[in-house]
Length: 228
Image 1 (cartoon, rainbow, N blue to C red):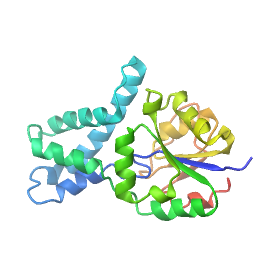
Image 2: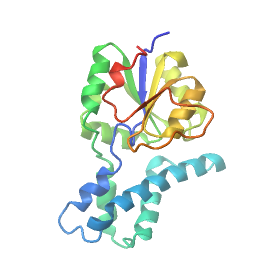
Image 3: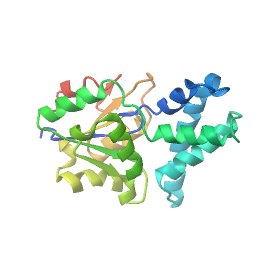
Image 4: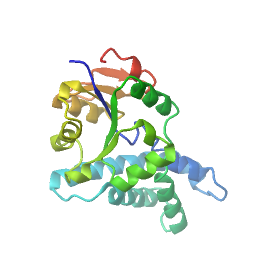
């Protein structure tokens, strides 16, 4: 059965999660951040994901915006930047308007031109996703933004992937799921989706039960995959 529905993870897949720290570091008066922004961005992302998994396992859910703040606070302290309230506020403001990767608008427009449904499925809270989609100008090429907040648990819980069929009335085999997170692509493959892992860093494939069906270096080739 051909794919009818293309679902994308948001952070790190459509939106560049390093952009907030990178852009803040380029602003006047960035100080120490100018030298440490890459390390800060990496630890911020790692802690953000780690907190989502730990909260899912322990049943102590909080929305992704809270996790984003908690992860930033840890990272600022780890890199000797805690205590700078203005920097913290600026980084969080920039996270609400993350840049999309350059190939994203054209790729999504190509999928829509073929009559395919397109949507985001993300750990992000609705407000976060709305801000990112709006600032990137992607509203016209996305049919919906599905947030884990409707089920109260983070990926890779199966209840999250269930949201796709509930929204679009499609079987798992009709879905192409795209993520930059290897664990997310693996879990979605185990669920029954056809998956594409956007492996921007050239990392090894995760040793997990599911395996991505396609491994790409960016999103440009998504419309060319022989799944439609």
